[in-house]
Length: 396
Image (cartoon, rainbow, N blue to C red; front, top):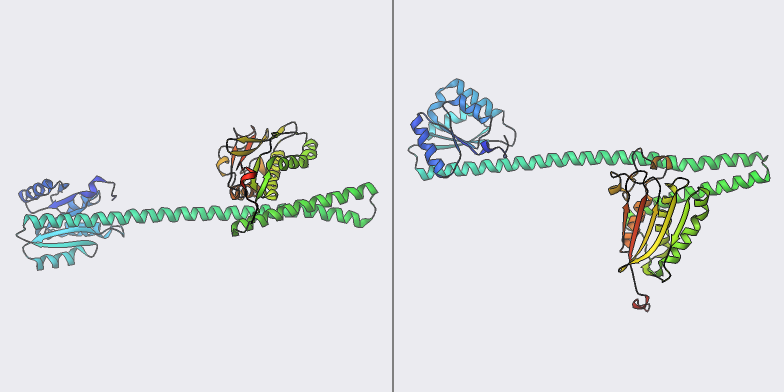
């Protein structure tokens, strides 16, 4: 039975004669109550299976042993939340109570009424029983919600466990790869049979591998600080363009090495923001690093700083692998990478964009990601409040 079932509001009436049943129906329907009349206990039991709010039964009908047993079977099979209200009216309350207790068991909520019945008492009892039944359906609704919530929590826990396991596996791989390279080059150096050129290359590769590992560890530390709420921001009035130009200069050689055209556009007028310059550099570095990382040879990456109303924007657009519509809403979540997509071969822990998102928000700004789909490039737009240096007090 369901509270959304219109039959669940019915009062089922089983009286000894059809005239009594129709009289009762008329009284209840005048009060705009839904009424169904049944002929015997077996019909009543079958109707209860389709839904009912209350059963109104004359005590005389319990002489039908087979029908009574069928009714009790239906009542015993009720769900845990359900106790069908049954109003029994008879010539003697004591006799009716004895019949109800013996024949119907504990799964029925029984109210005994003695003849002759006053209409007011009769209607009041029916209303009260219906209200009680509605509360049972409300309990059922809440239980269903709890069950659904428990299912969702279990699913979320399963997903979190899976993500954690995948992250730990990825972390192990990302940490092991540079260590393997370092170990290999150290073994070659220990052999002491390398040329001067090869020794220089070995030292360069060892340095590069340690930088990769240091960057991984620093990302992990940043995430730990973010979770603990301990990321330190030391704001000052700084022009955004010089910071961006320095970042671009850092990546020029890398972009050229990969055959990527790296361009930059900054305005002549200085655009100031209230920010931690080191953290802003981290934001720009991560975004530009990603853009180059996911842009194939022959592609382009364009970086632009501009004023847009009362904000300063940093736009980094690439012609690379782009983002799927499924990934786009989740791109700033920790540990989130495209399942089986282009980001997997590129490696990484899926932390950089989450860190960027947090840092931008800590500066009172916003960051958004745009992409027309896989293979069609991506654009990340950071927006920070524009400030007037003269309006910022420097005295303490």
